[in-house]
Amino acid sequence: MRQRRRISSGEQDDFDVVEMKQLATMLSGITDILTGLLAAVAMVSLLVGGIGIMNIMLVSVTERTREIGIRLAVGAQASQVLMQFLVEAIVLSLVGGLIGVVLGLVLGYAGAHALSVPFTPDVSIILIAFAFSAGVGVIFGYFPARRAARLDPIEALRHE
Image (tube, rainbow, N blue to C red; front, side, top):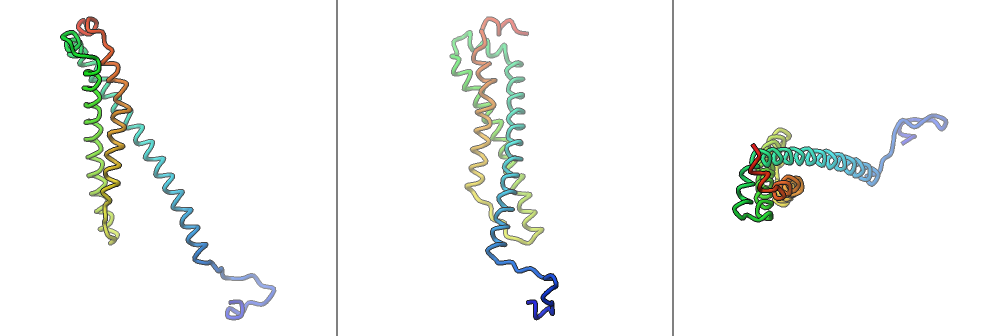
Protein backbone atom coordinates (compact mmCIF):
# COMPACT_ATOMS: atom_id res chain seq x y z
CA MET A 1 0.00 0.00 0.00
CA ARG A 2 2.84 2.40 0.84
CA GLN A 3 4.45 1.83 -2.57
CA ARG A 4 1.16 2.21 -4.44
CA ARG A 5 0.42 5.49 -2.62
CA ARG A 6 4.03 6.65 -2.96
CA ILE A 7 4.66 7.19 0.72
CA SER A 8 8.30 7.42 1.70
CA SER A 9 9.68 5.56 4.69
CA GLY A 10 9.64 8.58 7.05
CA GLU A 11 6.05 9.68 6.28
CA GLN A 12 2.85 8.76 8.10
CA ASP A 13 0.43 6.26 6.56
CA ASP A 14 -2.61 7.90 4.99
CA PHE A 15 -4.66 4.70 5.12
CA ASP A 16 -5.98 2.19 7.65
CA VAL A 17 -6.25 -1.56 7.33
CA VAL A 18 -9.25 -3.05 9.10
CA GLU A 19 -10.04 -6.75 9.13
CA MET A 20 -13.62 -7.95 8.88
CA LYS A 21 -13.21 -9.67 12.25
CA GLN A 22 -12.35 -6.33 13.92
CA LEU A 23 -15.30 -4.64 12.21
CA ALA A 24 -17.67 -7.42 13.31
CA THR A 25 -16.39 -7.21 16.90
CA MET A 26 -16.85 -3.43 16.94
CA LEU A 27 -20.39 -3.65 15.53
CA SER A 28 -21.26 -6.38 18.01
CA GLY A 29 -20.12 -4.15 20.88
CA ILE A 30 -22.18 -1.24 19.62
CA THR A 31 -25.23 -3.51 19.26
CA ASP A 32 -24.79 -4.76 22.83
CA ILE A 33 -24.63 -1.19 24.17
CA LEU A 34 -27.74 -0.15 22.23
CA THR A 35 -29.59 -3.25 23.44
CA GLY A 36 -28.70 -2.38 27.03
CA LEU A 37 -29.90 1.19 26.61
CA LEU A 38 -33.15 0.00 25.04
CA ALA A 39 -33.67 -2.44 27.92
CA ALA A 40 -33.13 0.39 30.43
CA VAL A 41 -35.70 2.57 28.66
CA ALA A 42 -38.13 -0.38 28.60
CA MET A 43 -37.66 -0.95 32.35
CA VAL A 44 -38.34 2.70 33.12
CA SER A 45 -41.45 2.56 30.91
CA LEU A 46 -42.68 -0.56 32.71
CA LEU A 47 -42.10 1.10 36.07
CA VAL A 48 -44.01 4.23 35.05
CA GLY A 49 -46.83 2.13 33.58
CA GLY A 50 -46.96 0.01 36.73
CA ILE A 51 -47.19 3.08 38.94
CA GLY A 52 -50.03 4.33 36.75
CA ILE A 53 -51.87 1.03 37.13
CA MET A 54 -51.36 1.10 40.89
CA ASN A 55 -52.73 4.64 41.13
CA ILE A 56 -55.78 3.78 39.04
CA MET A 57 -56.46 0.71 41.16
CA LEU A 58 -56.02 2.65 44.41
CA VAL A 59 -58.57 5.22 43.19
CA SER A 60 -60.89 2.38 42.21
CA VAL A 61 -60.62 0.82 45.67
CA THR A 62 -61.24 4.18 47.34
CA GLU A 63 -64.29 4.93 45.18
CA ARG A 64 -65.75 1.46 45.67
CA THR A 65 -65.17 1.13 49.40
CA ARG A 66 -68.88 0.81 50.15
CA GLU A 67 -69.30 -1.87 47.48
CA ILE A 68 -66.37 -3.81 48.94
CA GLY A 69 -67.85 -3.42 52.42
CA ILE A 70 -71.21 -4.79 51.26
CA ARG A 71 -69.54 -7.76 49.55
CA LEU A 72 -67.53 -8.55 52.67
CA ALA A 73 -70.57 -8.05 54.94
CA VAL A 74 -72.72 -10.53 52.99
CA GLY A 75 -70.05 -13.22 53.11
CA ALA A 76 -67.49 -12.68 50.39
CA GLN A 77 -64.08 -13.90 51.40
CA ALA A 78 -61.05 -11.62 51.38
CA SER A 79 -59.42 -13.83 48.75
CA GLN A 80 -62.38 -13.28 46.41
CA VAL A 81 -62.11 -9.50 46.76
CA LEU A 82 -58.35 -9.75 46.25
CA MET A 83 -58.87 -11.84 43.10
CA GLN A 84 -61.46 -9.39 41.76
CA PHE A 85 -59.07 -6.45 41.94
CA LEU A 86 -56.12 -8.46 40.65
CA VAL A 87 -58.16 -9.50 37.60
CA GLU A 88 -59.12 -5.86 37.04
CA ALA A 89 -55.46 -4.82 37.19
CA ILE A 90 -54.43 -7.59 34.79
CA VAL A 91 -57.19 -6.70 32.32
CA LEU A 92 -56.20 -3.03 32.52
CA SER A 93 -52.55 -3.85 31.85
CA LEU A 94 -53.39 -6.29 29.03
CA VAL A 95 -55.51 -3.67 27.28
CA GLY A 96 -52.55 -1.29 27.56
CA GLY A 97 -50.28 -4.05 26.27
CA LEU A 98 -52.60 -4.70 23.32
CA ILE A 99 -52.61 -1.02 22.42
CA GLY A 100 -48.81 -0.96 22.69
CA VAL A 101 -48.34 -4.07 20.53
CA VAL A 102 -50.72 -2.79 17.84
CA LEU A 103 -49.03 0.62 17.85
CA GLY A 104 -45.60 -1.02 17.70
CA LEU A 105 -46.61 -3.25 14.78
CA VAL A 106 -48.09 -0.33 12.85
CA LEU A 107 -45.03 1.87 13.44
CA GLY A 108 -42.70 -1.04 12.66
CA TYR A 109 -44.51 -1.74 9.40
CA ALA A 110 -44.41 1.96 8.46
CA GLY A 111 -40.70 2.18 9.29
CA ALA A 112 -39.90 -1.00 7.35
CA HIS A 113 -41.89 0.27 4.37
CA ALA A 114 -40.13 3.67 4.49
CA LEU A 115 -36.70 2.01 4.63
CA SER A 116 -37.62 -0.64 2.03
CA VAL A 117 -36.73 -3.52 4.31
CA PRO A 118 -38.83 -6.61 4.98
CA PHE A 119 -41.24 -6.50 7.93
CA THR A 120 -41.24 -9.79 9.83
CA PRO A 121 -42.89 -9.58 13.26
CA ASP A 122 -42.00 -12.37 15.69
CA VAL A 123 -44.99 -13.94 17.44
CA SER A 124 -42.88 -15.08 20.38
CA ILE A 125 -41.80 -11.48 21.09
CA ILE A 126 -45.45 -10.38 21.01
CA LEU A 127 -46.38 -13.13 23.48
CA ILE A 128 -43.50 -12.11 25.75
CA ALA A 129 -44.77 -8.52 25.63
CA PHE A 130 -48.22 -9.69 26.74
CA ALA A 131 -46.68 -11.79 29.52
CA PHE A 132 -44.73 -8.77 30.78
CA SER A 133 -47.88 -6.69 30.58
CA ALA A 134 -49.81 -9.21 32.69
CA GLY A 135 -46.88 -9.43 35.10
CA VAL A 136 -46.88 -5.68 35.59
CA GLY A 137 -50.63 -5.87 36.29
CA VAL A 138 -50.12 -8.55 38.93
CA ILE A 139 -47.14 -6.89 40.61
CA PHE A 140 -48.50 -3.36 40.73
CA GLY A 141 -52.13 -4.40 41.23
CA TYR A 142 -51.39 -6.58 44.26
CA PHE A 143 -51.05 -3.73 46.78
CA PRO A 144 -54.40 -2.10 45.97
CA ALA A 145 -56.08 -5.52 45.81
CA ARG A 146 -54.65 -6.47 49.20
CA ARG A 147 -55.81 -3.15 50.60
CA ALA A 148 -59.34 -3.83 49.31
CA ALA A 149 -59.35 -7.38 50.72
CA ARG A 150 -58.25 -6.20 54.18
CA LEU A 151 -60.98 -3.57 54.56
CA ASP A 152 -63.10 -3.88 57.68
CA PRO A 153 -66.70 -4.35 56.44
CA ILE A 154 -68.17 -2.09 59.14
CA GLU A 155 -65.71 0.74 58.45
CA ALA A 156 -66.19 0.30 54.71
CA LEU A 157 -69.98 0.62 55.05
CA ARG A 158 -69.55 3.85 57.03
CA HIS A 159 -67.35 5.30 54.28
CA GLU A 160 -68.97 8.03 52.20
